[in-house]
Length: 400
Ligand code: PMT
Image (tube, rainbow, N blue to C red; front, side, top):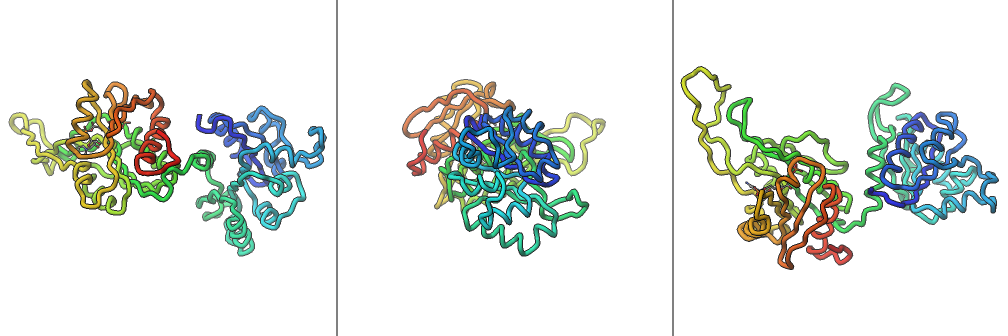
């Protein structure tokens, strides 16, 4: 659980996107957050307090004169207990009030009285968002250190299309998790390969492997949440790019090679997670091979470039991390690959532990020795590997 024991006050203001805040409570709770909902009077016209009470398991606060707090200071008690106040949706009116320091209802008073960070997810009609008054308020809030999440562009409840939509609950969750993640890779540029490659035999057939992309995508997400600027060069997989990550889609090893070489010049760190085909078909057919044209077609193979080894050999090479998937002798084979490719760090995994699934068992090999990580979901291992890399590349706040 990525938000274990984090105390989050979720402020809900009046707007049609308030119904999405109900899902957000559920998602935050699923990640272990302790969520206290506070609603403006306007929000209660869209969704009832009962909905939020049922989902958060806690009484909802709406009124600054609420008598449930023994000291009659709900605004102080609720905001003092919080690690974060998140307002989603944040209406134009609410942004205007907090930009000017108003404290005329419970939620705005809590925001003014807070000693914790504030994230807001604006949600409003396109014209309201574009109005210079709103833009002034938003600029003021940003200058005051308030973090804005979105808004997104798209179809709006009023029928218009454009900026002003609240981010989806899953996207807000990602931003909240990123907010709490230590920024051990702040300012670093990271290029990561992920997934399988597909080496064409003819226009519809090819040679590939069972890499799902999960490990590489988990690393891209973890590196971005740790503050890095991430480019993900991805073979064909079924996932959307992690939020905030630039993805370059490729199919073959040659395409992956070209994309990496184009992206890696400015990189501080390169992580090769992809299961790259060692060979491609030299005589790939232009047209679909037909079965009845005399005998089994011969497939000639030719070696693909070793992307990782080539990056590691660049004159100003980034810090290079490799992966090794083996079916046996993990330590011997992984160490041999580390040496052959001349890289400082390799993460070894057994095929039966790592290929395809959600979990993995990683062993890290570097000059300092062998570091087995406890078997865990790939998201957890990715965070640990990011910390290890940050530590090796000189971030003294990171621990392996
Ligand atoms: O995608 P998942 O289902 O989550 O599975 C993850 C994984 C098992 C694929 C991943 O954890 C992993 O181990 N990836 C490396 C697979 C492998 O064994 O690669 P390799 O031994 O062929 O290559 C060693 C290293 O060189 C790897 O970092 C690879 O990306 C890189 N390489 C290999 C060949 C090549 N032509 N170019 C490369 O850059």
